[in-house]
Length: 140
Image 1: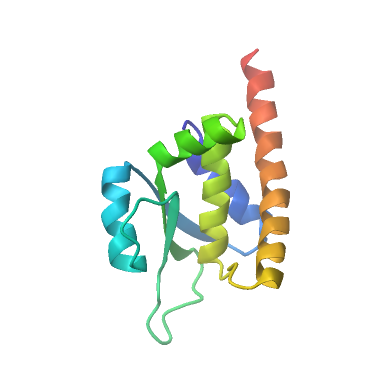
Image 2: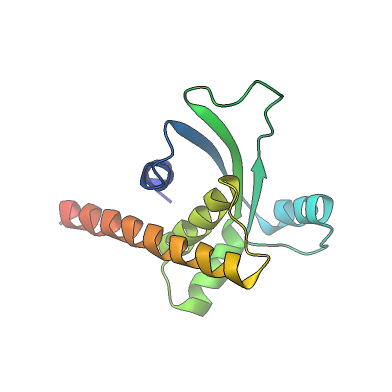
């Protein structure tokens, strides 16, 4: 989980969206389930939730805009990593990317939206994989 902040910054920079920031919160399933129930109406845990900041009229667009929060269930990330043959870092990166894309207005309700979002997720995943490789090379 080391470097999550730098990876979030890299995702935002790769989206070429200007100086923006997000909050990233890592939680347990015990915390995630009530959030998913309250905000999505699903009484079960989930892997990632995004909470975009809704600026009041005339309050958006300033330098360093805060987009909102990405909440990730670490327990769900661990499960998915095991099922998908990923490391925990890879699973967290995938969920971080997904959450940030939601904050940036992307969605996957239609097949076309889903395909577009998957392409962006793959491209951003490649950016973060390069970062992980550089970090591993430096540690050797």
